Length: 288
Image (cartoon, rainbow, N blue to C red; front, side, top):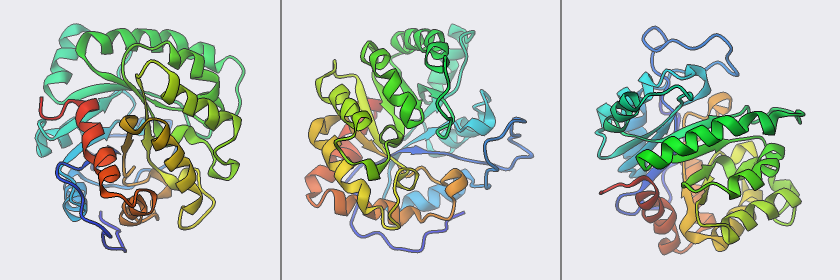
């Protein structure tokens, strides 16, 4: 399902990568778990391939959405269609995952593990502490296999987890600029702490420039531009871009419009190449 209304405003660099999107295949083949946060709209691997062609995307990272729980089949099938040399998968696994299962996932293109908390989860006492055992277990598995961790947290939880994230010794990504609201500006406590993590930490933290509609009050996402620029200037080699297609419960948003925002954030094509091609190639091991 391609709902693009705009046309691309610039040519993507060679080996441009979409580092965050989801595939929602036919639920008869890929059933959802019972406790859904949202009702997915069917968006097949073929649909996304058409969109990627329009944008000039040649490499891609499909991310396990919450609706499938730990059944990664839909995303892995998409990677098989695209070719695992061009597509990486961020999977959801639990602490009981075996070496044999990890080996199989690696052969299917998996290169990361997602730790996913509802991004609209209100402040909840004890939640940060409850995540620590899984984070420790998944960090160990990622270290063994050369993978990364991928975090989706609400803004308050991103801030609360920064001391834990700062101690990680595997590469990790934080989705949607940590869910920090653009209206709070670059000087807000949460965003300032996030920038300190990527700028002055140990070099493992990466930010995903994804889903501007989740943090913006502006129909053109203009209020996101200062945050994105500040994050890039803090650590230019540790930002990647993702479409977040098909945008979950925000499905009315135009993916091409989100892609075109990059031209406003990064007028210099060298910066766009850094975010779209160079950084994801290094983080996800494309070409290796």
